[in-house]
Length: 106
Image (cartoon, rainbow, N blue to C red; front, side):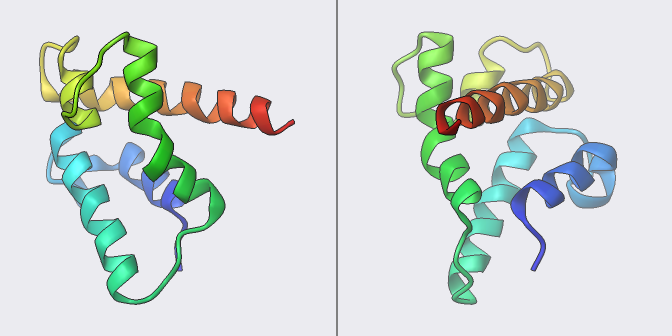
């Protein structure tokens, strides 16, 4: 099965194919559906995928200095003027999140 990050790379390159448009809100809903589908098929997330689903939201709250129960997509949209900007910002933040996670493991 395709890894979460492989899918994210495909979406980043061609968001229209997967989401219809480059939208951080649509990306959020896609990823919620992806996680749900994996669970329904009894396909476990790997360690890096678990880290994203469990850690990205709290990391983003800390990174932005925001305490909220809202989705990471809405947190990103607090500083973006449109969904496309939020989509682009997500991938920048995701890269930063992954780099920090790698440094903590090393």
